[in-house]
Image 1 (cartoon, helix red, strand yellow):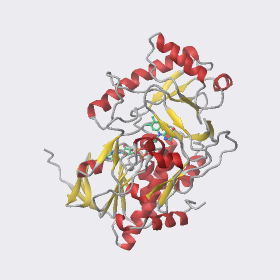
Image 2 (cartoon, rainbow, N blue to C red; image 1 turned 90 degrees about the vertical axis):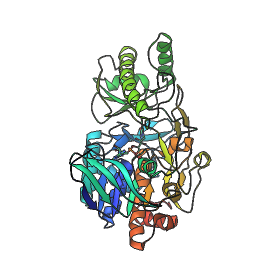
Image 3 (cartoon, rainbow, N blue to C red; image 1 turned 60 degrees about the vertical axis):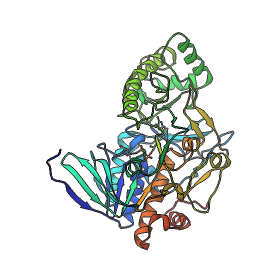
Image 4 (cartoon, rainbow, N blue to C red; image 1 turned 120 degrees about the horizontal axis):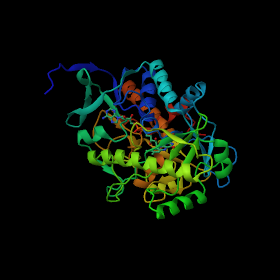
Length: 440
Ligand SMILES: Cc1cc2nc3c(=O)[nH]c(=O)nc-3n(C[C@H](O)[C@H](O)[C@H](O)COP(=O)(O)OP(=O)(O)OC[C@H]3O[C@@H](n4cnc5c(N)ncnc54)[C@H](O)[C@@H]3O)c2cc1C
């Protein structure tokens, strides 16, 4: 029981989750004049990028077999976020990542940038607020229940956006979702920051590509043979905006039985945290012993939580296919674009499949539930096939999806339509008016 009184709040739009998707959606809808409430379970925004310390802004640049000058293909809300981060000196210039580029961000400034943008857009933000249930009347969703330290909050809203990353609201509403390929998801990674690195020596020895060279993978494999707990041999290490630091995306968290852990299973999520901490120490030890420049290094921190790449996908009126990513498909109702490769984290070596000098688009229907009114969803839980998610989930795209969701919320209110009745083409046009440059 909970004897505390339940508080009721009425808003035009409830956004659940303050990751890149939720922040962009809430700001965009707030600017359109909607009364927006964003609820977030942690005490800050950023989701996978901050709590998970994923650390870099991927998905902005064209890939090329011989990468030259970085060419940014993705625009819109993300440009405003970049400007906020640059003002705070919290974003590196583009760093080489295989055949493309990415920018490393400072996670404290990410939180502050989100706070500033949300405040400016007039969004009410409740931190430490966990959505625990939805109001569903037949096919109509009318808001959600949120647990806070003051007690339960009963939020009534004609439109809700599920930006939880995990499609929590769809699952709570009993709408169709699925996990990975026949339930097998990409593995989680515990990201950590290594301090005390002589980055000049590190770069001189291992090169400027943040995907470590084959020689490093071979050393990891050799250490594995000697019994070290280093189950991933192809790793990414990034210099950051702070001196002497590497952001380390290298662990591969599996269960004791070797299975990829799924963070929407409570036991798996807990096991991933424990395994993650153990593996961080194993990789940090290996770096100290084997990588030039890391001899005096130490672990500064890990993510607040293990990094979760994939859990549930929502079933939309459209689904992004693996083939769409590989072929660079375009859609008349495309509301976001992505040049990012398929970066599939499964097994002991992530597979990267590039899309050179091209991009694909994500249609509006990937964010509209196949059933259920008063609801949109998006971010990494978009409606997409398993390998397509391995590309479509990165941060620049989540900003684009959020902006599209916020635009759709504004149009739905203005036209008094359900989101499913909005033409995706109208959302695309409105996004172009906001600087998304989807038509070039
Ligand atoms: C290990 C790892 C490395 C990655 N590396 C990169 C990278 O280098 N570059 C890049 O661009 N991308 C990277 N990504 C991907 C990227 O970080 C995520 O896919 C992206 O952040 C997803 O954004 P989102 O808004 O969909 O969801 P999330 O960022 O997951 O945000 C969801 C938010 O909702 C909140 N929430 C969840 N459930 C509830 C609830 N019931 N009630 C209230 N709040 C809730 C969460 O706390 C969270 O803040 C990486 C991901 C992982 C896991």
